[in-house]
Length: 184
Image: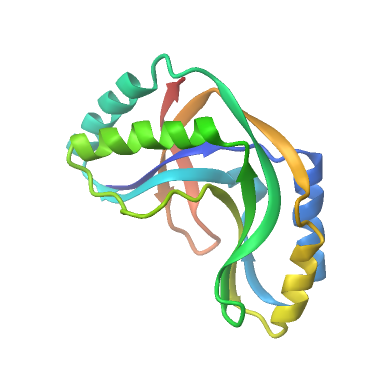
């Protein structure tokens, strides 16, 4: 069994890297587990523990579905949190100009359902998770830091492939290993 997910990999550029460093410095006294910039991605589907047989089925479906989809791009812009104002849980970077990303999600999620995979039945909200909040002593300070980036466009992301990752949980944070790449 492997703990797997399907994602679009994102290499952080200068503006995004600076924003992440700045937020980390400004919120350094808060209990936040910051994501390693080398591992940031946009998850299309988290499938969890999956057998080798099911991974082979998934591999075939992704090869077939992704072929001929075509390269596309989207923009990373803005910031926010998931969770309530008084109890934020995740700090994220938003995604805009993402019509083709949504189309890719629909294509993949349809294939997952057809091949018998269970996926969450909720609206797709593409984002980059940059921090997981354990606790914050000053939620208003967190909101203030993130407001600095309202509407800010960090970078354009060009997507040429979809990646199937294995996620190995470690004390230092998850390790993401590509186990399949699917050209678009």
